[in-house]
Image (cartoon, rainbow, N blue to C red):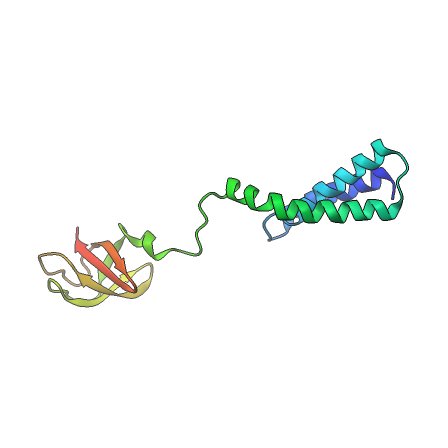
Length: 144
């Protein structure tokens, strides 16, 4: 394959990364195609099988060794969904009256959770309360 076809393929692959939902897979194939195109331009007449072999080798190596560090650099805090620990400090609303130390139901993020009143006073139904800890699926709440 001629060098300029490799460059076109590389640019097309880099541009298609924008439209793919994966995180930096096609990007490395595009970089590898650009590298093979530059090597073919500077290296003279190389056989087609060697160009494809070099493209495959560069693609796999760049995926293995560069993708992870690049993702960590771009997305330093990776949250799987909404972590339960991130609920501390959010506002929950009791769905029933909660005497001190009692466990009942409270609404948080549109869902009903088991909630334990850790405050010294009772929490009324609908009163805004703050999540102070999360233990499994039980929220520890205190009045604001």
